[in-house]
Image (cartoon, rainbow, N blue to C red; front, side):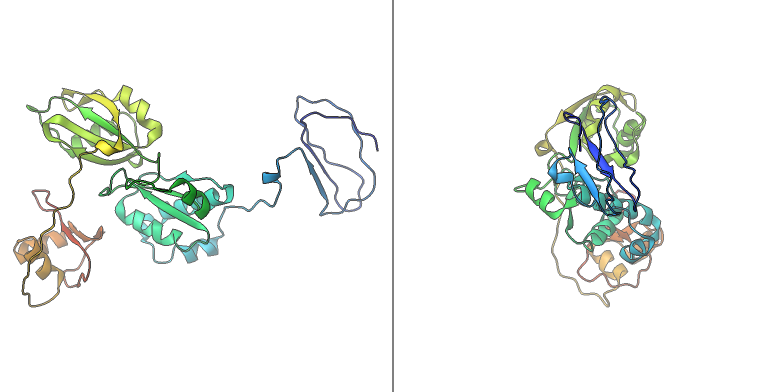
Length: 313
């Protein structure tokens, strides 16, 4: 057999059945003549040259079958099953490629369902990254357990390193106060999708701090110039400088006739039971970020949160 020397060329030869034809793949920049032996190679015979050892092997498809998806998504809320399914595919792909992928920012109910599904996968794990310990909207960093573990040694409370970035939006809001919705509207007005934005920490007349996807930091710094009618400056800040408020806790004893959620919440939030019933009916109360739809359940060992007209949590 005589063959030309092909520097740095990728050569793949394969034969099917008893045919003597060969399939040859070369980069277009090489124009070489070569020859192969004319013996039968068989269906399973493949000659692979020029590839690094780390990619010489069987390629496992990350696409899940319909049966696998149905089994893994069992118990997931149907309203966000599509999002959880995409996270699942992303996690499988990341593990197969031995990389770490980051999801978009997920709302708490979606995040909880996604985490429960990922726990069912072998050799795949996830790290929650929201920018600070009390973050509600978070990203999931998914991948093989070894890859996640090697990059998260001593990781801070904000999650996977580099998954979330923080911006400071400063301006004089003393005479034109802005709320959470104003800052969110200004950010979305630049063309960003909601899933690219995490928590927004409102700082009163000083402005706000916003958690975003790191890839969009430069874009926001140059695009976000106004909130309401107030000119603003947008700058990058370290996550360690976020001024979030820790949750307020109060411990006290109360005697109630039952463990129904309306009885416990009315005592805990010092609201009348009739007002609690109205809030539950309006779907403005939740436990572990899951909206309460019945006032008769017993939220044992869970945290009850209520959004009233004063935006108290």
